[in-house]
Structure formats: C-alpha cells, structure tokens
Length: 394
Ligand code: PLP
Image (cartoon, rainbow, N blue to C red; front, side, top):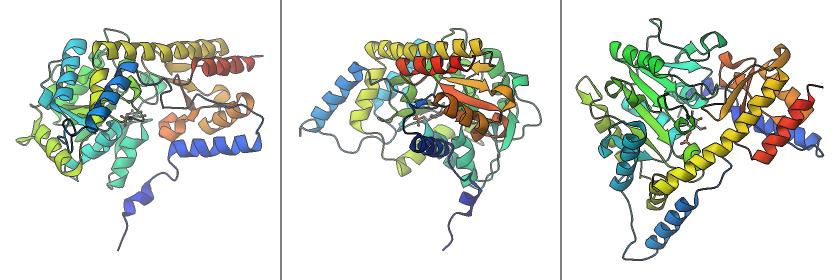
C-alpha cells in the first residue's frame, strides 16, 4: 500500500498553524503579556438575529413528525437557490436562473472539489501571493501550478499576458491576502483572455460583500462574456458570520460548455455522488440572510469591520508604513518596515506590541516582506492594537 506521495510536496506547516504555534510559545514564555490577534481571518460579530430566528424555527420543524425532513437535495433546496439568484439580480443586476446556483457547505470545499470535474492533466495558473487552498489542493493532485505575480509594481492586481498557459485560472476578488480589488476593465481583460484561450476562470468572491464602491464589479458575471468562461464561488462566511454554521454556493452558468459538455451538469453530478447537501436547518438560516432584514444586518456587520479597517489604515499612515487594501476588503497588506522579512516583522510586532499578524511569505514567495492585518477583531481590541502600534513611532 502506498500513500499519496503528493502530500510530501505540501509546505510543512499550514500557515495558520505555524502562526498559532509561535503565538502559543510566546504567550507561554510571557504569560503577563496581552496578545491581540490582527491575524484572524475569522469573523467576530455574531449571527444576525433574523438568522437565529430562522435556525430556531427550522430546528422546531425537525422535531415534529409532520415537518421533519431527512436527506435533502444534494445541490440545495430550490427556495435557497432562488433567493440567491434573486439577490444577484437585485444587487448586482446579474440575471441568474436558480438552477445555476448550487448550494454547498462553503467556498473552501467547493474550490477544492471543483477540480474533480476537470481533466487530471489540466494545467492551472494562479496569482502569488495566494490563498493557500488553491495551491495546496492542486499539489495534492500532483499538479504544479503556474504563477503570475501580484507585486507593488502592478498594484497587486496582475493582468493576463500571453506567458500564462493554463486551462484553469484562479482569481480571487477582492483578493486574499492583498486586500485589493479589480475594476471592471481589468476583469474584462481576464474574461477576454479566458475566452480567447478556452480556459475557465475559477472566481472566488468570498469577500464580495466588502466592496463598497458601486462602480466596482461584485460578481464576475457583471462582465461581458463571463457566462462562457467562469465559475463563481460565493460564501456566507464573511458576509453573514457563517464561518461556524457553514454555507456557501457555486454558480455554474448553463452556457458554460467545453467540448460539448456542460459544466453545470458535471458539477451537479459530482455533488450528487460525493456530497449529502447542507442541512435543512442551515439552509433556512441562509435563506434568512437574503431577506431584507438579513441584508440590512449584513451591512451593519460589514460597517463594523470597516470601522476597524479605517482605524488600522489611519494608524499605518501615521507610522508612515506603506500598505494596500483595507478599503473593499477585510485585509490590509502591509509592507514590512525597515526591510524586515515577513517572519522578522511577525516576531517584531509580537514582541514589541503583542500584536499577531500573518506573515505574507506564508501566501507564497511574492508575499515576502509583507504582513497581513485584518479588521475582524472587536473594535476595542483593534483600537488597543492601534494605540500600541502608535507607540512604535516614539
Ligand atoms: N476563499 C478565500 C479567499 C478565503 O480567504 C476563505 C477563508 O478564509 C475562503 C474562501 C473560505 O470560505 P468558506 O468559509 O466559505 O469555506
């Protein structure tokens, strides 16, 4: 018996475990120090009350024989698929049919499972620095991706060029870890490129709810021709505090077809065989997110995190540290001061301020000399962290 040898090619420690390990060791050695995590990619605001009410109601239904439900449709209940399709029409002016929306337990699972429907020999391209899941799921399959680099020179928004040769192209917008966001014309370039080269774009819109500027596209399907070359993955995690509840969706347009095969059918087939669907209770909670009360609560939560982000950005300006993002994204991408490496800056911030950041190099070589901060902590903690950062100026 042989194990999957590809696992040996994975980075030794998953980035966030390495950060957690170092933080634990520091706290153990310095029990008197207070630590503030500006590294977290997890939300801190609780679920909107309208969601909690819907979850409770669904629980009660499950406890009565008349309204009890067993296995549901693997690809999601029609009412939730319809609610999401309508949300896209109303909020983004993107016309979708409910059949194009397939419900899942989150974006991470979909982004890795989608690889099942492509040829094992398919080639892959992604940006660097990158959300580690895109890279590691491909490494597990023995694929070595091609990278296009997000650098200060291209404002961390790489555009297509003819050196990119891939069947599958990952785009994350707004981007994790750099917090930057493509405009319409830039996304159009990617769509045109994918159509020209018969490639498919796997578009990760997990942070779309953070885009505040109405001129910026929130869905790839706002771009002409995207229905013929893109799959969009969405998540309720950051949008509505579902990181622990688990619900997301993938949009596979009906027109999306390669060599006469419809990807929508393949993805539904894959999910029907390998996935049992999201629980009825969770889907009722998710449905409540897309109600008018739910969307209002989402806006309030996003505004809460954005207040934190404004504070972080103002603090960095006062320190004279260069940074990107933080406006249409929960992430601020900070150039390490005094030419420190990412891990040196991590150690420096931890020792001097008790602040935990995420070292940029953990997202790829292109992330070296940067660290990532997030607006997901409480306002009180973020304010305290910023006060401590300002002390570094003295
Ligand atoms: N995509 C990106 C870019 C992320 O940063 C994350 C989580 O941090 C996810 C997807 C995962 O989303 P979900 O919680 O829906 O699995």
